[in-house]
Amino acid sequence: MQFVHARNWGRVVVGCALLIATGLGGVSSASATVSGKGTPGYCQDDNGVTVIVDFQGLGGETLIRCAPGKQENGVTALQNAGLELTGAGKYGLAVLCKIEGKPADQACTGMPPESASWSFWTGEHGKWASAQVGAQSWKPPAGAFEGWSFAMGKSYAEYPPPRVEPVRKANAPAPAPAAASEGSTGFPWGLVIGIAVVVVLAAAGTVIAMRRRRAAND
Image 1: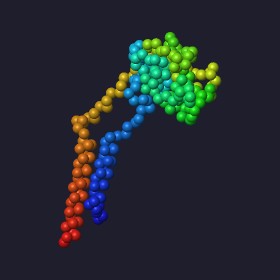
Image 2: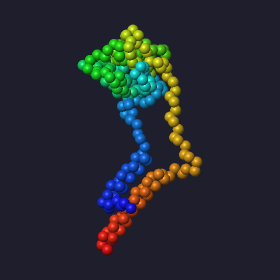
Image 3: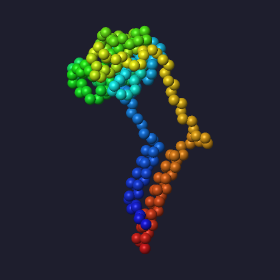
Image 4: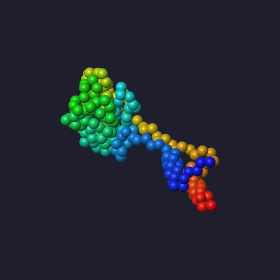
């Protein structure tokens, strides 16, 4: 039978503890939006600006977020909705190159190409209208909608509006917490078992080390 040297038992115990902690903790997914800003879904009243971002051919779901309160302009509405922005070279955020890191292949050192650009839209009477001013010059009224749509392989006259209409809708309810399985008391048995395993391994290491020392002294 192969024994583990006593001085290595600390490493074994630590390794087991890490494995247990990882298994209990699960895997967390990072959000692409800026933490602490905006809320998901439509603004539910006129106190805010609803921002809709359609990635079109870039892939990914259309984003709908609320920038609460009064917004200084179209760019600040994007920022306060919690979206990550990248400006185009010396123009800064006056010309947006990327929203949420897309398109990923653009260097953003100068003006984006006409055939691969973000277009800015405003919601009017339940329909999209191409913005007549730049996003930094637009003063969104209370309860306004603003839209961003990516145009790929199209000329300026062919830029598509967002595919979600600028009409306030009820947000989907938050998912209900998972129901406890039948007979479950909610007690964290996994954690208790994990701690017990670590204690048993530590005790076993101590016993083996003591037996080896006794055998060496006989």
